[in-house]
Image (cartoon, rainbow, N blue to C red; front, side, top):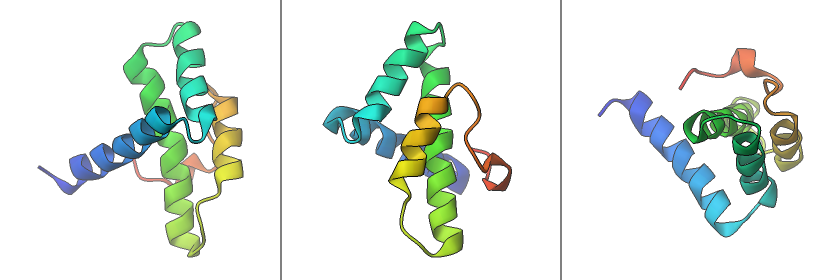
Length: 91
């Protein structure tokens, strides 16, 4: 397994935990909303993962905490692309 796949799996695991624990509830609500809008579940999950990666990458590069407020803002904006996606790795 490559590091790329491992990272993708870890971030997907974070998203799955958020959905299972309903914390933040916006993750589950966003998944449900995107599916109701007609997006395939896998595509909807990929969009949410991008929002997570934006925040994780920013926190790592800026040496600061995960910005949950901006994460939720980006979730609410989906299917529009999250802020700062030009600086994130593709997963």
